Length: 263
Image 1 (cartoon, rainbow, N blue to C red):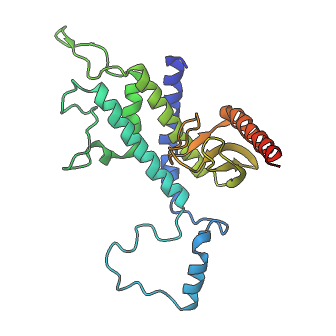
Image 2: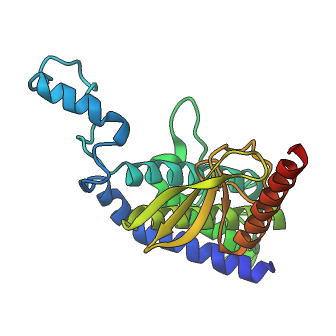
Image 3: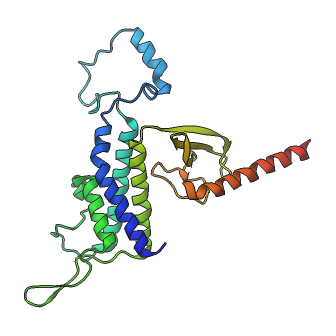
C-alpha cells in the first residue's frame, strides 16, 4: 500500500471513530434485547435468585454497585474500553518517535501516563485520535517562518513508514470495532470446522445473514497469517476468507485421507 492511500484511510478511520464516539457511549446505557440479556451463563443463577426474594443492596459497601446499572450493553462497553486502550497506546507509540524535540509546554504535545497522573489520556479517546491524525498528516513537521524572518524548528518529526502502517492498522481496527458495536443486527455462530492453524474454535460474525468476518478464539498464539483484532483474536476479513476456505478444504481432505489409510 502506498503512503498516500495509507494516510487517507487512516484519517478516514480516525474521523469515523470521533464521529461515532458519542453514539457508542450512549449505547452503553441501552438495554440489551431479550435475546442478549441476561447472559446465557447467568440465567439459571438469576432465576434461582428471583425465587428467593429481592436482593438487599442498601448495606453494600461503596463502589460494590457499578456506575452502570445492569443490564448494560456489554458489547458497547467493551468496545469503548478496547478502542480507548488501542488509541492511547498508538498515541504513545507515535509520540515516542515524533516528539523527541517537542517543548514540554507545547499544547499539541501528547503527554505520557506516569505514576503521578494519566497525562493526555485524561482528555479521552477523541484527543488521542486527533493527535494521531496530526502525526499521520505530518502537521507541524516543517520549518515555519517567524515574524522576525527566522525559521522556527519543527514541533514534530515525520512518522517513519512502518509506524504509518501501524497507525493505519490500528485505526482501521478501531473503526471496525465501533461500527460492530453499533450494528445491533450482528450475530455470531461457531463453525463446525476448527482453525486449520491451531485447531481452535472458529467463529463466524455476520450481519443480515451474511458472513463479514471470521475469528479464531485461540488468541495471539494462533499462527494463522492474518492480523489480530482488538480482542487479540486472529481475524479473517473479506479479502482473506478465500485463503481460509482453501486451508479448511485441505484440512478436510487430509482427514478423509487419514481415515481411508487407517481403515
